[in-house]
Every structure is written in structure tokens, then in C-alpha cells.
Amino acid sequence: MPQMRPGTLRLVLLLIGVTSGSRADQPIMNMMPRWDGGYGVQVLAESIHRSDLMQGKDLVAGGHSETIQQLHFQGVYTWDRAIRLTFKLPYVTDARRELPGGSGTKTVERDSGWGDLTLALPLKNYFNLSQRTGNWSLTPQVRVPLGKKENGYSVAKRVWGSGLSLGYETETYHWLFATSVTGWIFESPEPAKWSASVDLGWNARDDLQVLWESDFKWNEEDAFTLAAGPALYWRYSDRIHTRLEWKHDFVSKVRRDRPQYGNGNRVSLGVGFVY
Amino acid sequence: MNHKLLLIPSLALGFLLPFTALTLSAEVTPEMRVEAVSAKLTDQPQLIALYSGGFVCKSCGIGARIHLSKVEGVDASVFDRGIEMDAAKQLLYIAFKPGIEPDLVAVHRAIDKAGYEADLYYRWTESGMVMAPLPPLK
Image (cartoon, rainbow over all chains, first blue to last red; front, side, top):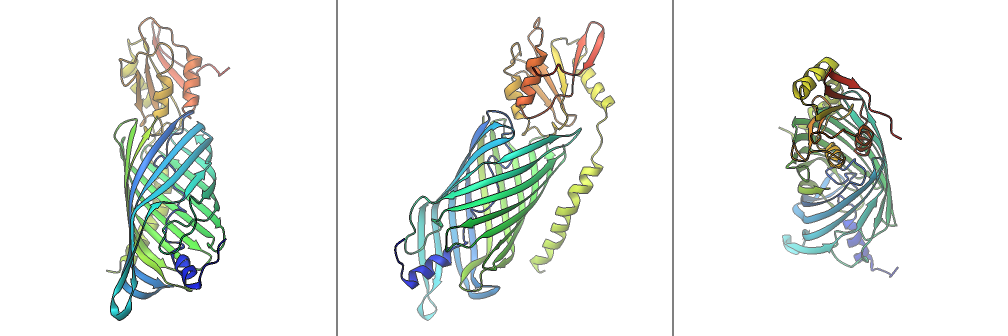
């Protein structure tokens, strides 16, 4: 690995943890396909805005923000209900961050391009009860860097990583409950991460589900984020599915040893096709 | 108001509601299913109905339509590709072409491939409504 200057290294480290790539969500819309030979693709347009540069719980530079616009290309193939293979590949269409400059000015840096590939193998044990269905899942995942670390602003982490998720979800005609825990370890110097999620869904109609989703995230550098918000799933047809979600950082505590962006909002709109 | 205060009731709802909701969900009784099936199948010998425990979500059950519609003799001109789903009662209706004898093993295999178990099937015959388990998979 090439030697980096301390300033460059600090800049790269600053970016660690800014992406949400450790989320346990899987295509398509976290639910399909559960049938043998099923496959699908989806695209999510995501906008993340973090409004403050922080250190721990404290503001370093209020109003110095980071905004990331990206597309997520994702796909899934289901051999049978117990085994799936998924991929997730983000593309940053535009990312910008504001750094404190001299004399109260702001320096703006930008980034764009492909992110890192995440491959996962969700293993599911389904159960079908009288009026309820559900599954336990175990999902090994691997993060594949699609490029080398570069100096300057880069949303992608560009390091190898491996993760494991354990999930449980159950659904009746009216309600959905899902929870999961996920752990990730990465190549140095990326800190290990853990996350947990709790989702509650109400099936307002046969083709419409309203959810409240909560994500808890920690890393070994003592950062913690609690993001929660509503989501809406709508089935246009057997083949076309859409999802809109918004999450707000109710608790945003970044690592204490260096500045990071916090206090974020995330909006995502997705469309998926299943066959 | 401090927005963090909103989170406390939200999380409480998130944890507590599912358990109460799962407990309090209205029970669909076997009698209610028979009533629904009778209304649809009476004098319609080309239709069969399946009760599939766990079939509660049409989005998850899309595979049922995909696999059942491939069963030989299914009449794609009826319902949606020959299949109608009633997730509220965990029922699936399959339309066969007139004169075709449904291959119930193939039906059972299709519902298995869709990720579900078929507990019972219903069919209207000259002697009335038949309700029986599907033949086992070979």
C-alpha cells in the first residue's frame, strides 16, 4: 500500500463512516423474491444531507454540511426460498462537503463515481403458520473495493470488508415486524461497525405498506447514530414495486478523535422489478 | 419541541405494537374460508381453491402466481393469468380450462416452489364441495 502523507491520511480517515453501506436491507424491497428461480433488479435514488461538522457530540463547525446524491443498483437471485444471492453497487452522482476555510470562509470539495460492491448470501429459514408467515435469516456479506483509495474527498471506502447479519421477520395480513443485527469488519484503518434495525409495517391495503423504521449504528471509534423515519412501499403490479423512505438522525454522535459530519437526513426513492 | 422526544413514543410503538397487533389480529376461521370458497366455487368445477397457511402477503405471494400459472391446463384468460389471490383468508384460486383434470401433484409442487405449503384444496364436484389435503410431493 502506498505511503500517504499525514494530512492526506487524516482526510481519508475523515470520510470513514460517512456512507450508509453497512445497512442490512436487501433487494427487492427487503421482501422479494421468496420463490424458486425468482430474480429482480432495483434502483434506489438516495439523497443524504448532514448539516454539521461534529466531533463526538460537539459541533466543530455548525452549518458546514455534506450532501451526497447517489444511485444504488441492486439485484437478487433466489435459488429456492432458503438461498439467495444479492449484489448492491452504489454510484455517487454528486457529493459535496464544506470544510472550514480561512477567515470564516468555506472550502467545497466534490466527489462522484462508482462505489464499492457488496455481495451477500441471505440464507433464510421460512415458517408458515395458520395466519402468519416469517423467516429467520443469516446473511454473510462481503464488501469488494472497486478502486484504490485516492487523495481527497471520496465517498467510497475502497477497502475490503466482511459482514454478517442475523434477522427475524414476521408478517400477518395486517402487520409486519422485522428486526436484524449486523456486524462488519474492514481492512485497516476502517473501524468495525455494528448496526441493528427494528421495522414495523402496517399493510394499509393489499398493495400498500406503511412502515416506521429505526436503525441503530455503532462503530468501534465510539460513534453512534440512531436514525428513524417512515417508509412507504407500493406494489404497482406483480412486476413493478416502489418504495419511498425518509430517515432522520435523532441521535448523532460521531467519533471523538476527529471531525465528521453528523445530524443527517436521508431520503430514498426506489423502483424494483421482479420476475 | 425537542425532536428527540418524538423518538421515545416512536420506539415504544415500534417495539410494542407488533406483539399486540399479532395477538389481536382478527382470526380467520375455517368456516369463514369455506364460506368464501363456496361463494366462488359453487357450480364452477373448473376452479380449485387452495388454503395455504402463511400466505398473507400478495407481494410475497407473487411467486404463487408465477409457478401456478405454469401448471398444465391453467386457463390464463381467467383471473390474472389464471390465478386469484385472497391473502386476507390465505386462499388461492386457480382456474383450469374446461374439461381439464387438474394435476394436483403439480399444483402442490408449484405452491412449494412459491415458498408456501398448501394445507388443503377445495373443489366443487357433482356431489358438492370437496375439501381435502393435496397429494404428497413425489
